[in-house]
Amino acid sequence: MDGRTLAWIRFARSESGPVIVCQSCGHQNDDRAQFCENCHAFLEWQGTRKTERPAASAVTVTLDSRSLQVVPGASVEGRVRIRNEGTIVDEFRLEVVGGAAAWATIDPPVLRLFPRSTDVARITFKPPRTSDVAAGPVRYGVKVSSTVSPEAYTVENDLIDVGAFEDWNAELQPRSSRGESTGAHTVRVQNRGNVPLQVAISAQPGGDGVTVEGVPASLTVAPGQAAEAPLTVRPTQPAPPEGERSHSFQAVVESLEGRRVTLDGSMVQQGRTLRVEWYARLLPPS
Image (tube, rainbow, N blue to C red):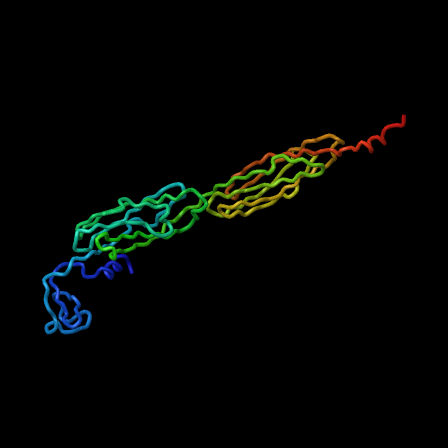
């Protein structure tokens, strides 16, 4: 059942002209009717003729733009055609309802129309570029209601296709670690897009004196969420006692779409601390 049918069911009897009122049930029938549409009484015996019907509000809505598509952060326009099917000069209020209402506007929001006249309004869809706006079809409706008779309204529904976008960042926490035998790091990936994100994580040491454990690894991150992968940096040789040795490495994060982020890190390896008592034993006797 389309918007036009709905409008006529809601707002029947919108035309002016002679009518025949059935004396059995009070129903107003067309001037040319022979039997009552409601109780089927023979109107030649039971009907009373009136010269006109009371004025009424009625409206039909047609969405001119179908198969709209929009990417978050951009905008797209559609058109809606409003026709006054009533018998009076009427004022109609227009509003967008449904899932797209939060990022849709309609202009003008109010139309004043003569009977049997038509006008057009513009709908602008502008979803924000955030993970809250999911990719895929979103249902919306245009509700048009009479300000003269608020019970006279109709709603026309459609779908708008929201496109997918990728937006993410990655960071290494901490950038530099300290330890005697290992350094603990975490690669944290934040998905700011509106579709699930899949990334691969790899790492390579800056020299021969260190290895990086925990890679290769992969993460699947939901829109608006973050995920983490642990890395362990392990030197292959001990540092000199009381000394330090710095080891550099790189972690690489790459998405299925081909975006690549390189994270530089380092681990400061600390040598053993010598106790004074133990060191004194190494000294030759005097």
